[in-house]
Length: 65
Image (spheres, rainbow, N blue to C red):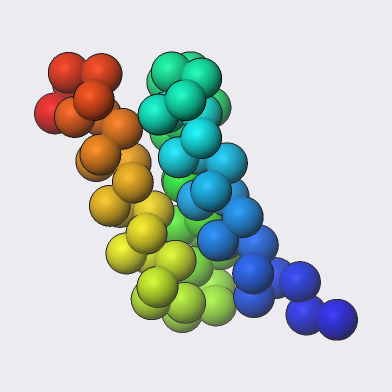
């Protein structure tokens, strides 16, 4: 099974939860960065968009954007 295909989306979901629900900035940025690293290998553009979108949303919520 090719789990690498969905792994970036899982990282984006974990990062979004960490930023918006737990308000844990360190994990909330770490997970999307990992998703972006995998994106560069897999070229999954939806994961790239999601990682940027939800990271910016989380940063806006905590007042850093």
